[in-house]
Image (cartoon, rainbow, N blue to C red; front, side):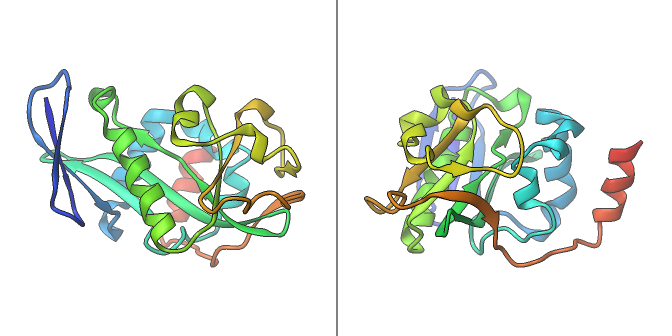
Length: 201
């Protein structure tokens, strides 16, 4: 069993897990999480993650304010999820991803709790729509659907069946037609050069 504590509500939820009972906190990502987050993403996706089409919408941008989430246990960071500002064919929206959970902690509900926390927070902040590229079998139960992205294009190749959208406000993506572009604040982290060198190695 895994005990999950939410940073905001301090409420606890119990999940079945294969590694016994331990506290896992889910809350806002902190600046000091940078290196642990990069290691987790490398473990989950490899350095090929830098070549993904959606990375073109994230590179050099800051995540949306108050929409970067981390899951931690006593050993450190074990899960991450961020959302980013975009315009979807002229419609303001968010881009979700990447979502990653440490291999040893998967199938314990941590990814699901990160998703639930992120979607609730995005709605509370007044955002109206979210896009992502991911496994339909995983994301459709959260309400994501290919039907919301049929009129949209991303800046690069992708498997179109994995391009999904969610309307936090009914009808918010109905008029979304054209290219998806990044509109988040610019960001050049002081550590970026080190990761660019690692990527090129």
